Length: 525
Image (cartoon, rainbow, N blue to C red; front, top):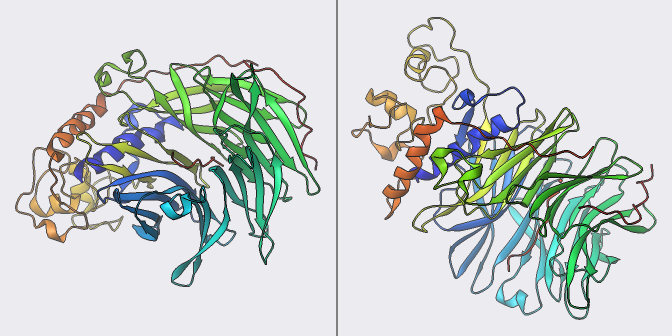
């Protein structure tokens, strides 16, 4: 459990730097406070994250404690602590897959997911929709599909749910459908047909209730050789208009958002060129950019737009080469990268300290453009997969000579002790600043150093802590590996990859050179 907390800090401390044009590596440890989301043992993944109007993150994901149990979990941060609940559970073969979380206009959570349990899988897959019903959750079936390949979920301005669903059965032959609720029942209409099984959809609805869908089509190079091409569909309130955006690529995962003018922006993974690409519509034409092409990058991309209309992208790096990491991480390279645009120039940086087994990434920005990221990691020994999230806290200046006993930030730690031992008032009593498994409050009680992992308050009663301290075989080895990364953080060296610039709603998929062709008509006003 201790190692999970340290891993989160290492990964997310760096994100606050990646998204700031002025922050420096020396800022490490001064702004991020780790929040423990879910410390249950088992396999987790397929994350979906949103930020509510108060700036608090909400996350849903699957949790599999063993091969015969599948759970859908929902976690929310209430401003003080994480609250985690299981909203659906299944037993037997199959799985709960690809959960997608959205908040309606009242910040009420709604979750859609693919039910691939044995019973549902006999039908090819079932799309489920969960919404709060008093103290419980209402579980509805949206539809049964021959082969449920992927879907995207969002709300319109009236809080009615909409889905873009790919059915790749022999009967439907790669049909992309739009499904919505009329108030009485679910209705279906076809957006496009003949799509590849690997097509991943991303859907956004603008403030005029026009529906935008980014997805991949298929191009036949020969009768048996195909590649995926990037496509875009717009429903203008009367009919669907489909267009091919680019053919000089082999499209994988996509993520789409709308800018302040309601123009679509799409990032995607180019499987053929193993690169992260970005396309933007200015109202007339599409502009294409390759953001990153260093090794195999771009999969599991997640796109968010800040208040200045600038894109932020988190994505996956498949490489173990030391060429793109600093000397300290040759054996444990970062596998998450982030890209941001500043003054019309793309910049990319590594998120160091992340494990090299990440399979799902979700990025979100709050109203202050504070970045949040949740991802899956894999601990040495194969014992844990876990989900993590962090929150940026307001830094409280200690000020000159705080009075003994004063606690200006109400964290149960005297300001004088925090200033002397930690150097500022950023961390709370529940944090574990040195990653030794004891909270700062426990260190204060025992008189030990909260910034020195070698001083441990062994006499402190751990049972009083909110942290689960279960001992599991292999955890010591994992802790030693991660401690080394934490100790080295103060001397972290950065290496930036500057791509050549030529001038996201993330898709869900159940687990199991740019050339233009007739650019689509601009979204009508």
